[in-house]
Image (tube, rainbow, N blue to C red; front, side):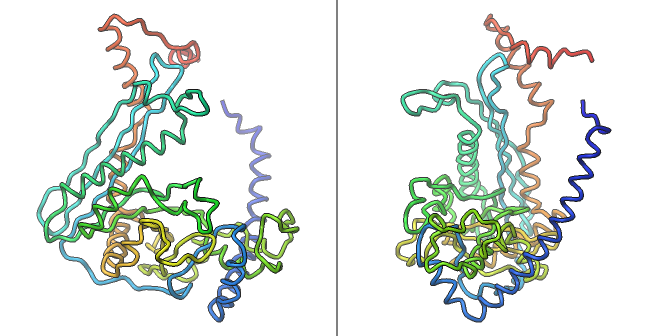
Length: 394
């Protein structure tokens, strides 16, 4: 039970702190806009500092003017928008059996073709030892949230690939969307000259299909908290001969010159740059400039777009971002999907609604499990903690 009376004093302290944070954020935004103007006039010092070492924070490399804007492309007539999203019932050690469920919501919306939409969900039950346990350092560990999230991402990609192959309409342009980032961090690649983590190995198959069928595949990120573009501007504040943040004597100094924009998000910067419907230039993240021939397969880049209600971040592989026709199609489809969804792409909204597992559905699932165990004559019980949660009176 939450005692609101006792927490009210803490809430007042939080409000005062947030008021101070707003002022600090405004100062950082002003500094970023000044740095942006400096970069626009001469980006060379920024790039030289970034390339002076590879032991610094990640930055973004613009494919054109850093503050370049692109207007909304012309309308598509008939087109198709596909989307998937996933949710799960996690492993619960207090329940009668160790298992988990991944539920994938699928949506295909056809516009101007007269075809009915596809809107459904596909549940997948995992209960075998090879699904429940992860081997590491000679031991087996029960699957954790991070591993389960990776499995869900892989399954989302598989289902989206199936939609691209079997539910596109010949002659009708299509766009395929995922909810959230598509980047899968490659820890082994993080020590390389340019971060190998800006790739998406879980989505390789769907990217191959999308490239073959000329369908852009992208991840839509609402409320993005990343600051790679701001980090590029922060490089201009580095006061050291080389940009080696690991060995920098000021790395823990909160008043260091390079910290005056720290904490500012890219979305705040682009709110001052983009008008509704416009998108930014495309960016690729990393540490150092990497020649095109050395890029990893399906390197992930991104752009920002003003959908009216917010500045959204869109991530896509290079086969999309380097192809003007596919890029324009993605730009247009995302903006108009956001208008239909009152600020968030309609197809992704519907995919989420079909994917999400409500609390009562989770409880009903475990009652079904219990019923099956009883039918098979298998002893079943829950832990005392779970039993108290189910039967508590007060």
